[in-house]
Image (cartoon, rainbow, N blue to C red; front, side, top):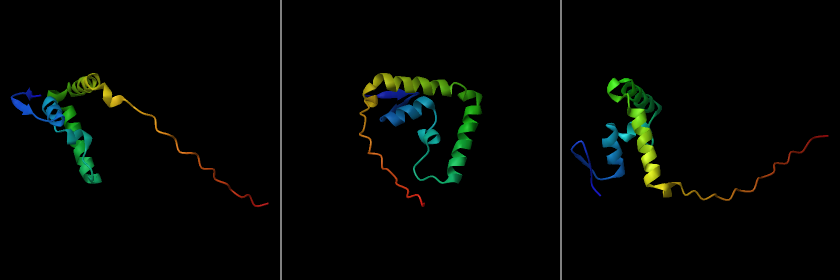
Length: 96
């Protein structure tokens, strides 16, 4: 399947989302192993983008994109309950 957004071809779902939103997904989701300083800088950049009038519709776009994913891929939400581990009883001896 081929998706073209603003003249660019998206090969993966992540590329499609990035082209549709106009920002890299890592900006919103973070990256594994980022430091506290990197996280703070990333969140600061995200706040700046959300404050920009050009991106005022971004939250609505994200909601529409999420809703479309849910609609197109309901199997993502086939949740199977896992067995709960037995509760471990903690005995405390009370000194008399």
